[in-house]
Image 1 (cartoon, one colour):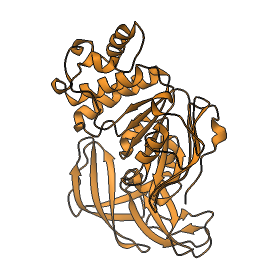
Image 2 (cartoon, helix red, strand yellow):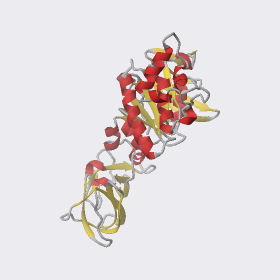
Image 3 (tube, rainbow, N blue to C red):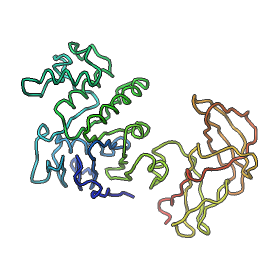
Image 4 (cartoon, rainbow, N blue to C red):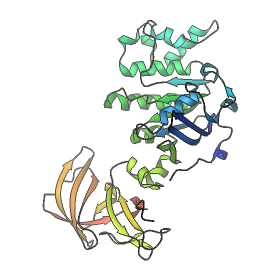
Length: 358
């Protein structure tokens, strides 16, 4: 089920995308998207590859011609079927996956590129200081690490004072350790800039780390938009639930407003009686509680660093032989074959109708 964002949230936002659709030939890749980005706000477009998020970013930047809908930046209409402001005049800063630095220019010259006026070199130097790259002003892109190139690309994007920043998978080319370090640095730089930011990512953890709000896309449409905590604890669909991490899946039927599970009945309010449903349970929602009537045998236990993952086989009446995972903090490695009592945090158990059965 696709949703539309309430544009009244911030009609004066730094970026307003209204009813935008885009096709490549007969293929509809963006379908009626509505989204706003407020001043100083970071919004992440999150979704799997091919869902249309990078296309939407390119349309907002002016790199793809708008086909339907309209786009406003800082209250100014920059794109409609009758109007197309060139990308360089839209007041947007662009950062791509490959950073797109000029190899024949040194770091200072890269940041200075596109600036005008007698003080442009001093301004570029201040931007380098802001991103911690002053010591590399005379270096060339091939002499920099991936994280250093990323900071230079951001400095160049911020140097003209854009009203909106558009970032397309900016950390995808970095290894895991460097990615964590660089995105922490860039989060603070973006927030200090005061400009609104729309960032594309396929990494749910990255979206939760960076974003004030997340807009989940699926097949070109907006599936759900909200704060990271809202999407994690109140997902609107099974797709959104599974996007944010592994889930245990149990099947059942709505009876008396509830669905029976090995952990006891779970509320299925709002769903018609007799509806076939799936119950999606996050592994961290499963807890050990010896006095519980729900019993399970340990199949395997693995330490994953900060948490332990326990594979369990439940032999209950409602879901015989159900295999589930339990995630607990720290080191907890019960022996194979050991029987555990289990409880459930129902705030992390979600009931959805199975498509085609309602």
